[in-house]
Length: 250
Image (cartoon, rainbow, N blue to C red; front, side, top):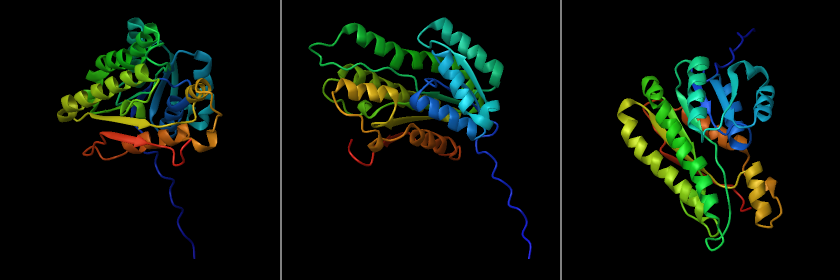
């Protein structure tokens, strides 16, 4: 008895075009690689050209789907150049993933206001302005916007008020935007990962004077899988908010 070969499944995001910020490391890097592997055409952006080139190299057979473009998204000219590159490389953008972020830790009594300004610029103002710039493209394509937030965007811990304030603001932006664009067919998801084994999280543990328990943390790839699953849902369904936590307490 002979059996016909089962065809390999078609990549689930073929035909879709994505921009991923913060793609030079950590969660953004994992998301860019995963979306490219799923068949999406991806522009991966960040400030470090060398790190972005390494991401494309690690994409393997999916490298043909992954383009890199270094940019500082806190700069208006940088955002405009990035948007022009996305339109030139991808055509109709249908996925925007905000994963760029920065983090400072200090109690309010000692925290430097310049650190608050920096976190606001990166964590709030830049994604707001970039979304505003690309929203007409996403409306035309009935696309998806994913804000990679933090569990600190739900409940702020001590010593992290500045960072948590920016993440609460980002959550508010996503909630308001979701109501504004739902009737146009655009989906907006806030994803709130807990402790994840990223370079930024390693610096957090160091600042806390704690050992690095990477084996008890989530992996960036776990978050990337969740983002991909959200994007593959039928267009009739929106996932508004997801909280992801390590199974074991780090």
